[in-house]
Image 1 (cartoon, rainbow, N blue to C red):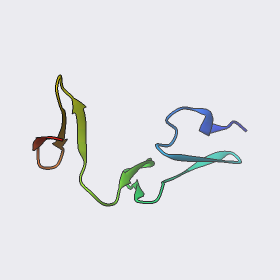
Image 2 (image 1 turned 90 degrees about the horizontal axis):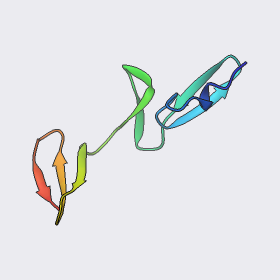
Image 3 (image 1 turned 60 degrees about the vertical axis):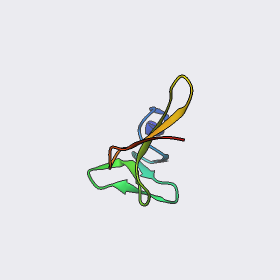
Image 4 (image 1 turned 180 degrees about the vertical axis):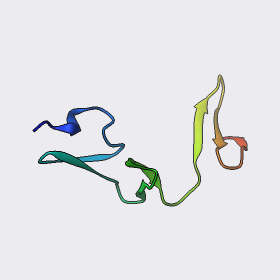
Length: 70
């Protein structure tokens, strides 16, 4: 029996090794993606991306495509 959880990326959050297999779980506020049971998705909120520019930090909303300085 090998420990599949030693493989980086086996699960996006919590990997539980079991005899002959493994199981993925998610932290509170996240649920397993029905299309890929090894990945977790947020159950609430809106996805966004933060990035730094030369003089400020900006946030882009991934569902509304809006950018704001924060």
